[in-house]
Structures are given as C-alpha cells and as structure tokens.
Length: 272
Image 1 (cartoon, rainbow, N blue to C red):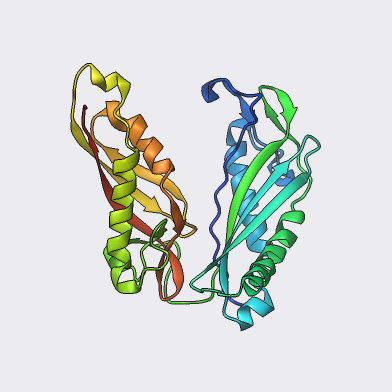
Image 2 (cartoon, helix red, strand yellow):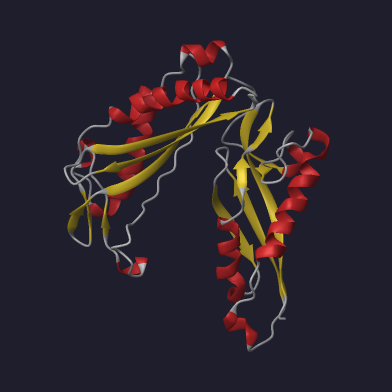
C-alpha cells in the first residue's frame, strides 16, 4: 500500500439561532466511544485525535487514481446529529498538480476521491451527541483528507515563498506560467489588501497611521489556520478580517506535491 499522508482540521459552525457572542456559548463536543471516560475539558482534543486516528486507519488510496498518478485534497463537511450519528455529508475534491481541459474528465477524477473519502466518514461510529448551552444539538464539522503520492517532500514542512516551485494560487493568477507566478501572487495579494482594507473607527480619533506586518501560513490544503500580527493592537481586528478573506484557491507546490507556505504581508493603515 502507498504511504498515506493526510491533513485534518476541524471547526464548529453555528446556526443563526445562536446569534449571541460566541464567548457566551458553552460547547460540549460529541463523545467518541473511546473517549467516554475522558474529562469534559479534554473532549475537544479527544474528538479531534479520534477523528484523526479513524481516518488514518481507514484511508485507502483509490487504485484508479494511483494508476493515473492523481492527487487530491478532499474537504469533508458533516454533522454529528442529536442522536450521535453522522449525517449531511458533503464532499468536495480539489485535484492538485494537474489540469483538466475536459470538464467530464475533471468531474470523474474528483468523484474517485470523493467516493473514497465518503467510505471513511460513513464508518465513523455512533457517539454521545454534543451540546450547545446544555441542549443536545447537531454539531457541524469539517475535516480535510489529503491523498498524496509518495515523494521526497514532507507535507508537514513549511516553506518560504522563495523555496516553492509554484506559489499558492490566488484569484487572478490562474493562467500564469511558473516564471511569473510568484510575482503575480505578490501583486494580487497586495492589491486585494489595498482595495479592501478599512481604517478602524476606533483609531480615527487618534489619527494613528501604521504598517502592520502579518505572517501567514497557507496550509497544504489552501487554508489559513495560523498567523502572527506585529503592530498596534487597534489594527488587529481589521488585519484578521482581511486575512480570513484572502482569495486563496490552491496551496503552493514542490515536485507536484502540495506544501505549506509562509509569507509576510504588510498592511498599511492610513487615516483619510
């Protein structure tokens, strides 16, 4: 069997009925059978670790995809309902390091990975249901499963923009060749920041102007889960808002393999 590498992260969403500040919401995670004796304050970690182990145990690289040397990152959305069962599974495969001009062929290739990921998720055992504010509730979750062919690169390693062959793909750079792709990434990212930055109302009275530096890590599934902000606290909230809206389409690549990329963005705040 091929060496398997996967990336997982989980988040919780809330319906419009929970419109109050998130700090006032008490969340109790669904409890895996193996986690029943774990204290409540450790259930979140136990949930995530159990999900990770479940995927590692059940993942199998599809033979057809292996033969075609296809790779994919499958984003999986699902819920653990009020009875503790998985429901409302939604999968989206994102092929990496390959281009399809035929839409039917692209759809078929994505279906291969989505069907493989579906088998994993449907095997999740029944749990004790989660709670929101002490009420048994359906808990939405997301996990990303990476199907990667063996290579010399470690998916867990983080590279600088200079060290990758292809930078993360941002809106506006899809048709760029490898020689100009990094410059396009920088220009489109800076253009997006400049176009969308808003000077915070709380800073208007002081008239403070500043440059905030934000170091982001674009993960090997294209998501941005970590960042460091260096600058006045008054600009932190706006900096975070911009980072969460960056139009990143795909991760960076080395040797046709997706990798995590770190990059520092300057954000200029001017009082106008």
